[in-house]
Image (cartoon, rainbow, N blue to C red; front, side, top):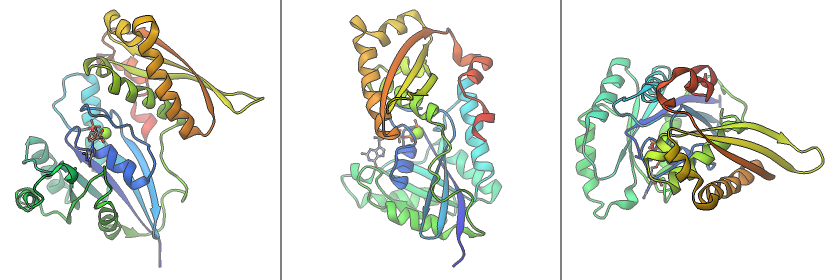
Length: 301
Ligand SMILES: Nc1nc2c(ncn2[C@@H]2O[C@H](COP(=O)(O)OP(=O)(O)OP(=O)(O)O)[C@@H](O)[C@H]2O)c(=O)[nH]1
Ligand SMILES: [Mg+2]
């Protein structure tokens, strides 16, 4: 049988579980996840090679109304991700109704004639499972979806069905990447994202949303299995800096220690992490700083 492949964009509103689904399908954590919306900021590629088929996923930031340069960058990255793919996964939460966000996506699919799978995630949170039929009827009025898959990124229910549907929408012509490719995210970027994930977990929403993390140095020690890493957290205000550092440095220590554990698991060696906090006012609206922090198309092509 000839090998098949497909580019699959994962789109939807913020917080519906796009990145969780990606990680679950790949069985690896390549995208950070948090209970706060707007966790994913850039396009993230994840590759799954199984059953003679390679699915190349593009996780995207949740679609919302742009308010600043970073938001505009995120919207642009969603638009660009959708343009070149073979199929889209439109992710929605179980038990919800159509909103403006889904309408925008359906219009986009129509204008591009793009096959799309409707993924109804978080079915584990649904008390009355019979409600799903009504939701399917409502959402399928939006677009002629190739398939509808209820699932849960949390429990894994429906994930195999989802992969099967996506394989069915792939086309012959061989693989696009090596079979052992997992992601396009450089280790430095993944490490910075792990730090940002802990900030999202331990701090109030506006602080991580106003922050960016940058790994400035990552170096293997020659004589031992240790990586030395220096990372900087940029925040918008002195008051935020104080909160991130915490009393006697406690918060920064906690963020660093949880992030380090994730990094060690991912990299398979010990990590010596040094974390700094710096104030860069209004970095979200300054294109040149965004670029220097890695929010640049050239890095993600
Ligand atoms: N109960 C339950 N929670 C889920 C499920 N999938 C994701 N979540 C939770 O939903 C929250 C958002 O998950 P993410 O994967 O970060 O969502 P996202 O769509 O990537 O969000 P953005 O990147 O902000 O657009 C997290 O707290 C997840 O743990 C699920 O199937 N069931
Ligand atoms: Mg995400």
